[in-house]
Image (cartoon, rainbow, N blue to C red; front, side, top):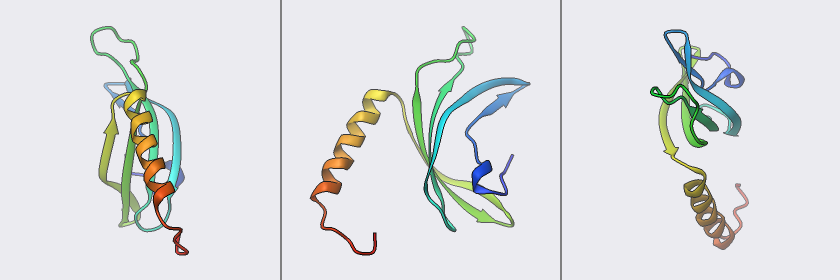
Length: 102
């Protein structure tokens, strides 16, 4: 279940051989000892068996004993929330002084 390489980290998940979380997209935001990844995903509705609407997750990992383990996560429940968060972050980032340390 734990990945040894950052490129092998996924949000996909199965229970009893049935996929319950389907990864739609994945981006590495930061690499290093504490990498951060963003995922777009869908969850299967247990009642209908259909995958629901798009959701998002920002996850921070730590490599210990040769494997990456999730240390923290923040889930965003729908595209409207994602757009609102992106707009606020974009505004804050544009107002911030340029940092030469990046």
